[in-house]
Amino acid sequence: MNLGVVKGPVTATVKNPAYTARRLMVVELCNPDWSPTGKETLAVDTVGAGTGDKVLVLKEGNSARSILKENRPPLQEMIVAIVDHVFMKEP
Image (cartoon, rainbow, N blue to C red; front, side, top):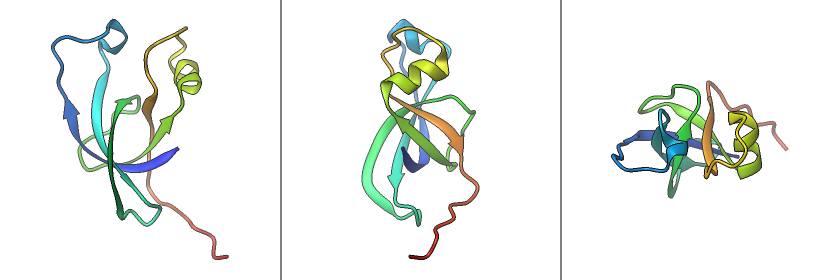
């Protein structure tokens, strides 16, 4: 799982049927202190996240299939939570 900030939606007129009625979002991946890692990814939004939201991105195909309750959607990364706070325990 990764933390990230939603940069905005992606519009595609032609896409795999598994993406029908699902929003694709560009997410800038971040460290736990919300500093950017310099990487971005595309993720399917499952929680109604919007531009600027801090989110948790799941990157794992089997979990995606479990969450969506589908056999084999061609999805790997999905937004599974809008994050309010990250608590880091001191070592």
